[in-house]
Length: 200
Image 1 (cartoon, helix red, strand yellow):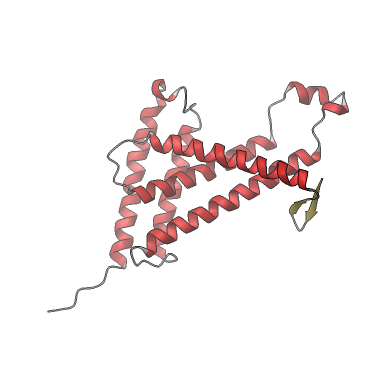
Image 2: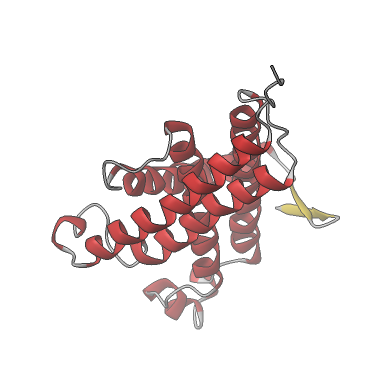
C-alpha cells in the first residue's frame, strides 16, 4: 500500500518500497538508454561540446520520461484490462497507478538534479554565473533542441528502424540547425563574462 502525505506517496512496507525502487530504476534506465541512442546518431561535425551533448541527452531523457508518463495515463487496452471489467482478479488497482506516478516523480527529480549539476559545472568551469540571463538562454536553447529532436525521434524505433527511416534526414537537419543556435548562445554567454582587457 502507498500512503498519501501532502501529494507524496510513501510506501507502507519494505516490499512496496522495493517495487517502487525497481520501477523507478526501470524507467530511469529506459529513458537514459533511449536518449543516449538518439545522441549517438546525431550528425558528426556539430559544433556542440561533449558537455553540451551530455546535457542534451539529459533533456532528451526527461522529455522521453514525460512522454512515457502521459502514455501511462491513457494506456492502450490490453487483454488484462478487458478481463478486469468482468473479473476483479485481473483489474489493475489504484496502487499500481500510484506506484507508476511515484516512480516517475523520482526519476524526474533525479534528472532535473543531474541537469542542474551539469549546467552548473559547465558554467563554473568557465567562470560564468550559472544563474544569469546568458546562461539561462544557453540552457533553454539546449532544452528546445531536445524537444525538437524528441518530436522526430519518438516517431522512429531508434533501434530497429532508424537506418532505413526517411525521418533520419529530418532528424539530422533539425540537429544541425538547432545545434547552431546552442553554439551561438554559448559564445554569447562566454563573451558576456569574458574579462575585459586593460587599456595599455
